[in-house]
Image (cartoon, rainbow, N blue to C red; front, side, top):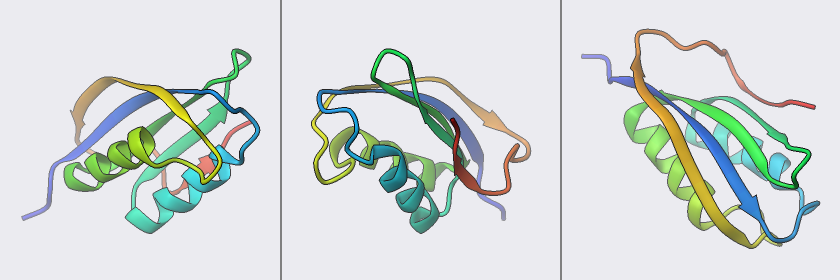
Length: 97
């Protein structure tokens, strides 16, 4: 039986912008096996969307909340618009500009 696919929007508040957070996020997403995107905001935070099997999305959400890039300090991570989806909207994980 195929696992349930979910999506979640993410907003990550970082104390130290410019620490390659997007690059490390893209790399971790590919390792875990989720799809979606990540980008910097004009407010110095990072936003994005993660899609995939529920257990993999949960792993990515944990990484985004607790680990991040080696030089980042994560002040807060908010996830919203979590919902079950019937199919993935993306074929990979990418950095948006």
